[in-house]
Each structure stands twice: as C-alpha cells, then as structure tokens.
Length: 284
Image 1 (tube, helix red, strand yellow):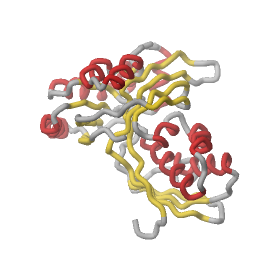
Image 2: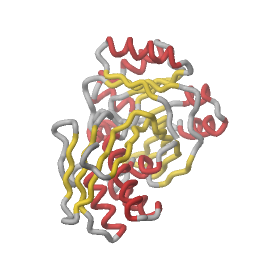
Image 3: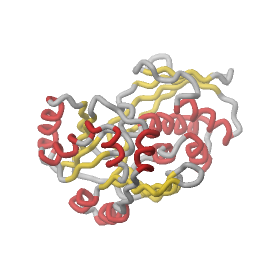
C-alpha cells in the first residue's frame, strides 16, 4: 500500500480441536488445541514513528485506533521485551471477520510482531514473549502453520500441515464475544478430549481421521450465546464436507472438503442462505 514502508499478511486460523479446562483461580482456562492457518488473511501495513506514538487505522470502521487495538498492543509488548521505544503507524486491510473465532485481531498482532522482529533483528524467543503479553492466540499466529497449543496458547509443538483439501469458512451475521462464550461455558462446562486424536491423524497424514476427530469444547456455549452459529455446521456436512466444526470462541464454522469443486458448490449454497463465506486452503 502506497505510503507504508513495511507490510505483512496476517493469516486467519481455525481450531481443528479445542479442549477447554475448568476455570482457574486466576480467571484463565487451560486450553489444548490444534490450530492451523488458512489462506484467508488481513494485510497489515506499517511505518515506524520515532515519537513513540501508536496509531492504528483499518478498512473496517469502529476498530480501536491506538494500543487498545491488538496490533497497537503488540507494539507496546515488543518495546517491553526488546528494550525499544518505537512507535508505529499501522493500517489493516481487514478481510477476517470479527467475533468469528478465526483469530483476526490476534493475526494482526502476530504480523506486527513479525515485522518488528525483522526490522530490529529480534530473536523469535523474545517475540514469543511479547506475543504472550498480547493474547492467547498471538504466539500461534506469529509462527503460523499447524501446531498443538497448550496452556493459554503459549506452549506450542509444531505439527504437519494438511494438504490436498479445501477449507470452507462460513459466518452468520451475528458474532459472539469471547467473554460471553466463556461465561456460558463456565455455567455448563463441556469437557472434551479431541486434541490427541487430531494430532495423531495429522502425524499420520490421515485426512479422514482428522475430519472424524474435529471437536470444539466451546461449541455448546457458543450455540447458547448465538444460536445462528449452529446451522452452518450441519449445512456444510450436508453439502459434502468430510468434517465440519465451529472454530474457536466465535460464530464462524468451517468444513473440510477433499474436492475443490464440491467446496465451491457448497460455498454458493451457503452464501445464498445469507452467510458470509470464504473458500480457503490450509497454509504452512
């Protein structure tokens, strides 16, 4: 984008599994999840500001325009761990929908940390420390690909990426806040154990096994907070997805298709029903 010196793509993520533990005394939940980046992305543009000021603009109106935006918060976290005092002017061309469970804000923050790391030649270990300060999904979005994530997302083990498939994402008009979904989960916890089976299927390159093991411990809570989020999962299976699941704590769901044409036909049908759809593929 003209006028900006640095740019990076901020890729969306899906949760192939999401096992959620009971609420801890500190208010957090221990998570175990397999996350995978997909080709859907925001574009993040940045200039450094020697004044230390942080300014964030977006193609979507109503987004926070300073360090309250996760992209701006990433600059503060970077300065804290790297001993810098840089400011930044950031512009985000948004494609990843908000409150969808696709890590949009976290991906933007990860892209900012990636750029700052390249500019200032900062080791990945320090960038990951900054990422943890920003949010639970940010360490993964900084690294990308596919990984088994534990704790609050800070402990990661790389896994093989999926190949030879299309991923269709569908989001209803409504969103669901992370706070509301976890509050609903705490009222009626659903403890699932899907992650080990998904990780094993990825290691074996078994797409059918991956699809059979998909799971999200927050699905019931999300469907309670936003009932419109449940139907797209059923429709994707009906339209030929080998597996379908809710992603993260938002209202977007995804379906995994072996055949791209089948995925494209399903995308048309889902769009005709009023859903926002994205035909994507897994990325390394």
